[in-house]
Image (tube, rainbow, N blue to C red; front, side):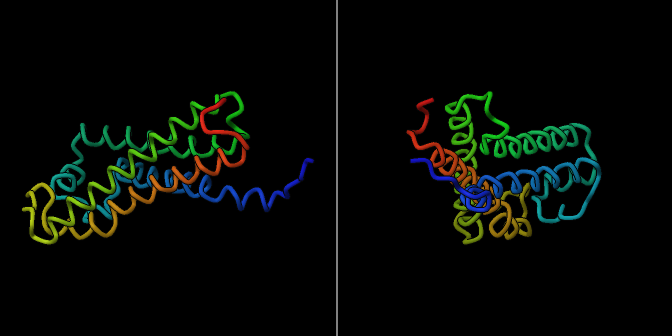
Length: 171
């Protein structure tokens, strides 16, 4: 028996896919902004990164452009999970890459939270390249942001596979 699902029902089941893409595009926009010379939010970064950003060091600016492009591609990867764009890409490639991205971000954000939490608690010394002012921002903004992105990607893959009524990586 075939059951038709309305567009609204279908989209509500894909919320994490849309959220993961918005997360990635937002993160890319921040990097594009900083690469173009913007300084808003630079004070939330560690001392070393902040100095390179304000000095407009060419190597650092190039890294910003590259990371901005990669974050933009992450947004496209999330959208490909909608399958409307990803029909030519095999399901297992989408799953493996999205799971890898999600796990990588969860591990990065989780490890960062632990590391920065230990710094904030005074158990581990704060490197001068980070500075005590940035520890708060890493603990409350940057590391949770990475963690949230990873969780969104993992939920997005789960939603993608749930909509296909078969096992992960089978096709």
